Image (cartoon, rainbow over all chains, first blue to last red; front, side, top):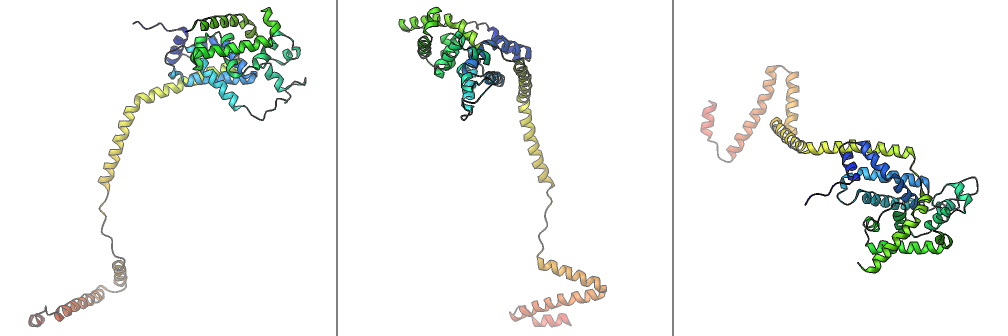
Length: 193
Length: 147
């Protein structure tokens, strides 16, 4: 049986292994937007998202030899998922949600609820994006990660199930609950879409 | 897979496609150029580390052989160079030697011999006396030798 052709990501990874930093840079840029959106949706704040994003790629570099089979994209997202979990665990438990973060009387809790959106958007407050962000931030983490992986990253449910190491039905179930929750919370907008 | 799963998955895919643009817009953003630059630097550093790891993996067999050979060599060298240690001298005998040396320096050679001789004579006499007491010495022979 002939070996399946390498995907673009695998080619880039191989070129990096052969000594090309440019190839790795290209790999980062290919996935940067989708991965960053997912991470941002999971950790909330921009600064945290930057840290987790960097940590994810640092782990990819450190463990590049451990990639054997599957898709590079799925492997990277699995690493990102673990980096997100580690970041959430490391968060200071005594950091108050009432801590002011700006001069407009906004609190840390407001920003986290809005998925780390910039402060001016938060002040406007009425846009669909803000409402979606607040609702998504209110989802349980397991549902939120499936929802974000599917919507922001465009991963299939099969890929998501592999990344999370759960049966396909579990991934579908989590998405189902997430969608149900959002449909209830965003009833008006839901009809418009 | 059940038919309901397929329906469910298709329905959820439709929802995801419908909501995708709005959700993407909410979380749209790129990492900062500084972050991307740091990642690039990490990638270069990772290549260096990997290169060193590969190099050491390649020379590991030689390193192991060289280490084993050097251990054997050092052990052999130490074995060959270890001097035979003399028997240790009893402290009293050493003290005697020191005293005799001091006396020899303090007296003339003849006197030194004169001093040393009686010691030997006393010991000899004591030995003969002990042997005599136990009946091992022929008195006649002794006397004839003295004559």
